[in-house]
Image: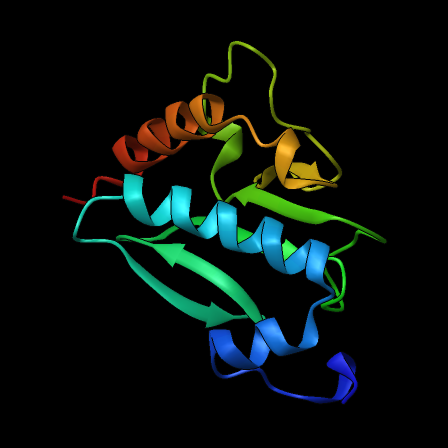
Length: 130
């Protein structure tokens, strides 16, 4: 089944489409996000990928296999209002989008939980969700 021609409605459906490396990275990132967002935050499939929101969008996890993510390989972890974050360690990439700042992971071992958690906590404060 081509990822370009379908509307993904569940995580099971998404995981079935992803190569193992992207599936592992996506799963690790999802677990970090789910464990560190307050209860008022929700996860849904939007744009065919996992999207987390409180009052507004907080973050998105976009595997390269899913079209329109702008990456050729790996998994993009994007913070919806990255332009408002301090990001003093310059962990995030400030690409062509003025609002969404991101980091691309090519293996699960590259994921820095501490850096992601710090940025997520700041993103939650900006969102104002409880």
